[in-house]
Image (cartoon, rainbow, N blue to C red; front, side):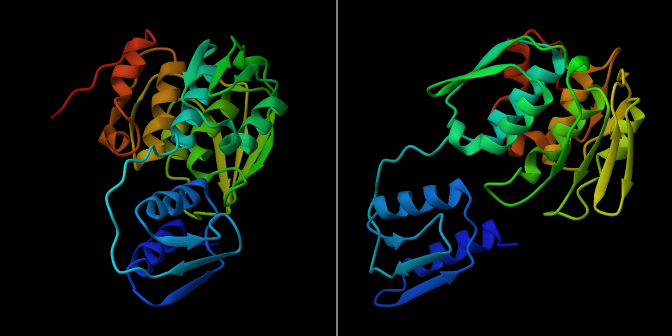
Length: 261
């Protein structure tokens, strides 16, 4: 699959190759690539094609300062959507570009989740997660279902009715959170690049370890859903990808405490 990081790196390197034109074939098409193009162009770069099969960068001598508003974080928004649905909560997620979340929202609707899009915010209605229906999911590059929401969705599928499958096409080893969720009474079995999830589980508190950023957010969701206390070790991964997560969770009335060693 095309690499987001490699595409961004080539764009930023090529932009100052004054007098040269660099053509990037098979680039990543994520919204963040389009946003980087728009940001660099606001500084005087000459880039076109982001979001398509070919990006063309005409090198310039120098860039200038700019003021620019970056796009909302679609993975953060998706994480809070899944969290509200999984916990049976109700709430407003502001500052969302719903066009960037079409596939996750399509799957959540298929499960029976209730939410509504209002311009730049999403209102999640109260859902009974145990009444949602399991689905089969495949992760893919944008506009497919994002691998960065796979661990969080696995928590929701553990609670929803029926058996679900998640096929991980992007990061083959991205199932390190499975053992931790199983410690919390989930039933998940990994077969190759596919996780089989038996839903209808009542999660229970446990001591678990976060292995990466998205695993940390998934375990937080599971801990909120679970009966009893959950201790998440190495949870500091979450601060790399979420702004003030503990503060936001407390504002939602969740009993959570961050303890530094």
